[in-house]
Length: 428
Image 1 (tube, helix red, strand yellow):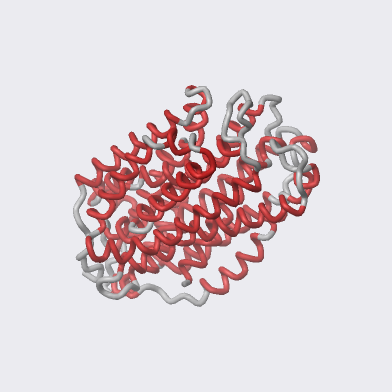
Image 2: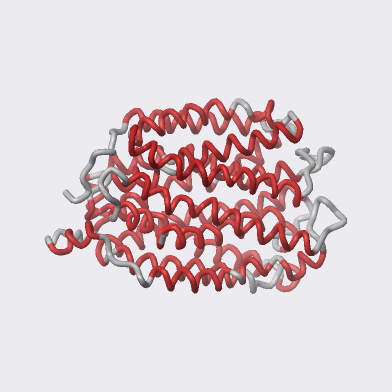
């Protein structure tokens, strides 16, 4: 539960920015006069956090492998919470010019730095304390923080949009842009206080405690993992690739495409923000359900087999973008349900698989580094590439779907080269 609450708060903070990157920041921080250029600039800052994530992974991974999981999780949560809260206090471009986007970039980098250390520590707390045969099931709980964080963040934005309706479907109301967008960021302070209360009550994992007692703590975990587990670092990075690309296409690009007017220079589906975000929240419910369902399945049938099957479905799903998104409301709803269900089935087992690739003495550093380097290759560039491919397709999402299928094929190769980790004994 501690890992679940912590990752929910961390992903809430991350999604608050992702939603604002589509809805608010192009108007307030990147007013170029061209909507597409402003959106791309906002997404570029969104992607900047992914570059900071491996740095956070190395920092928190080093101390997590040397000092323990608990202290690093508290530090990561505090860093994320403070950065998110401060974004809610930022002056806009109209107030201070280019200093505004510069400060936004700095705080966004801090968010990425914090999330780089959060996920792996939460996954280790869950899996290293799991009973025999239930490691993947326990590992899904930090993963469920992603859909829960999405629902809370976007539910809050939706509530504000409903309370302050806009007469222009292409942009929020003036009251929303003037002050209401800050509320979700400032609300992060309340959530962080709750998260800290939970995390300060955590006990250190038994597996790590045994390493300390045996005097097998690595002085330089990064050097050790690159020396002895470089193959696992590479495989883990590419095993996560399709998950990341699907994750950010379904949450960030889809929101832009769904809201874009059908007669815009870069046409989309023409849904209002309120209607489309409700559809997305309904889809994310399936994300949460299938994340939890993937754990028992991966415990029974193995992580590798489960992910190979799901990745094959992701590759096929990439070819269905045009027929589903072109089939009106039923097709779009089916697209969201299928996409988010696949997201749950691929994301859930990662909570167990990536930590299992590495020995205890370098597990935090290794799993965090693989997870977050993959964020650069997948998530940092995915929204940017998707908008470009959307432009290349003249408003059609065909090439965006092909991009997902290609990334899925790369992940499939990595899974084929990997080994099954279901029966590993973490205590050895």
